[in-house]
Image 1: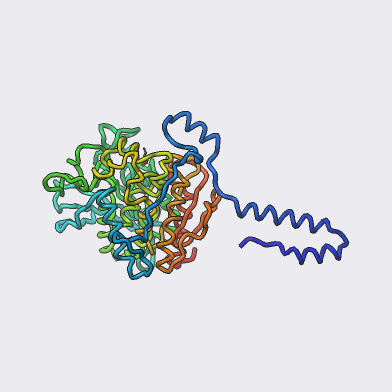
Image 2: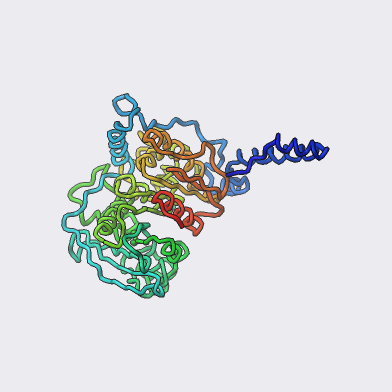
Length: 455
Ligand code: GTR
């Protein structure tokens, strides 16, 4: 709570002291406080100038954002409007179908033959602080089909099932911690330092640890579950032959067939299938989280699968939390050209025609309602359009309110490093495109708040 200076009290004191100077000083302090309250985030003009120069054709200037009208998340296809929470499930189903048809594509259900094999169980991991489990998820139940390795760290000595954060990683489970017990990934991955001929080497062990503050997560009483996204579908365009598409698709691909983001989101649901069988985890309190393309994935995973108790998007940008119609930073056309395998065939119709989309990304956030959802942006990450991410949360707010919950507890974009946490949470933090410890601390606080836990 901000301290509000009571002018009449001060005036009395001042009069008693025989001077008005104190009153004037107090009035000035109050003016400053009001200004601070009205403060909001603005992109650094120098950054806007330099990015505009560097990336010709990309919009970074707020003043040039086109006029747009967002589709109303509460307007039913038959022209009526949802006014009663009881009508929301029907509208939710319509929106979900629109995202399946036009954006991410349709995924299959849980494969009947899927198996889970716990191939590692270590009680005294991380210097005795953790219990480590590794699970091979065989989507088709066979060794020749795709296999996802799920790595789970649980806080040692937990009394009863613990809540968990579930997220995919970019470069293999062995990168999230230097722990030598983590199985080195053998899956295809992009060549980079320490990756030879598209396979990881020991050199990459622990290299993503900064994005996975496991000791902190465990100390706060949460489990961490993670899998390499390439185990589900390798992130390159091969015409959907490899990964789960190749294993599960039958016949021709339709323009609304699932693409890679849908496959990764589907993989998160399969990870949750496993967690539901693990007695150490409280599967009713699993927060799904993701950074960047995997932030888009987390939002879609949380939208399609209501078993996820909290949904968190970190710097997800275009096709994630950012409004497509603003065409700020990365656009629909740009993302479809750079990553033709991320979205379904139909999404290409909206290149430079965002206004024709029957949805915008605020409706993706609304699909999480009434569950808690958190969207985080970064100050230097204008490619992901921080303001567009905030406005998306704001436009999802009416759905949360209709459902009788607090939505986003602010009308104006908060200033830098000043998180707001209602049922919808939002922050824009100092720094660039990354998943930082600062971000994690907010997610832990947000989960504590909604799971009714104290630090
Ligand atoms: C960028 C892409 C973004 C974001 C990012 C990432 O190249 O334009 O949409 O997904 O990659 O995933 O790191």
